[in-house]
Image (cartoon, rainbow, N blue to C red; front, side, top):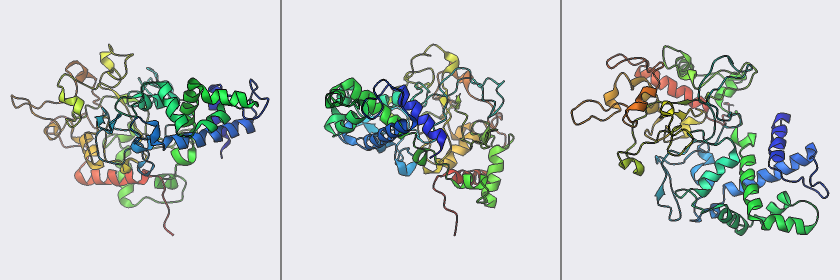
Length: 418
């Protein structure tokens, strides 16, 4: 395993304040070997917790129920939002994002400057980073709290209930080994019996599991093989890549970066920026039946620290496009159910708005219908959105097919033909 990976895992273990494994190590700095063993145990525990539905009030919903490994750790169905809660009938409010390729996601900041190893650090890219669609948490452990304690997800009332479920599921022995490894059995038993310690250890275990590069960021797609000189794109895929990159065509790479960093790191196919795309309102989401309700991303309602920042309303984090062909729902509200339609939206939002937005009572197009009036000024107008109604879209139907073909090269697990 790469040295950088284990250094990172060691930092995680140290950050959570858990003791080293082995007698007499409490309060001492862990050696690299001890940190590695601790990370391995945390990762194994995290994997077990990730697939354990008994951590939910219903007993039927695991992390993996919504983050399916077979679908790039995104949803395995075409629902815009998933069902959960104690009765498994409570609908969510946003589409489930993928958990893959988040390992270099920057902490949220309002003013992001690229590393000098990757791009021009003199440019302020604005609000960037953070986990979830609105970037409201920075660490995997903090993100794990959200579904565990959500009324419409796993439905636990408080951390103590999560801890009880973790112990009832039989994870207490491993919790004790990780969090109570001070030598005497009494210390181990005390660690396993303390709800706060159990909860904290479970959250960190989930975070460490999601840093396993073999599972969550293997860089094993055909495009990665192409970059390594081990495969070639088909003519259609090559045309798609060119269109994807071209500023006067798809301009996709302006946000979904397709080139290696200056330091040689593989492309993440996202700049992690938060942007307002004005995706059409999805009326299949129950909360959207209330005409006064708007999910405005960065400015709320789920995120609460920027509620008065009108210039942030409508912004959602740009997801990676790796494994995007494994999805059946697209954008933060799951408004579209085919990748081709998602690409079409980019090139037709301005040129053919009547295809995407409903009409008002007076017959005019209700453009950007999932935003109140004021935040409509925040909508991105960069290419290919720089055209007006009646103009030719930036991509033809055939070119859209080419872009979709290229996106198919971003799916992990590529095996070259023998």
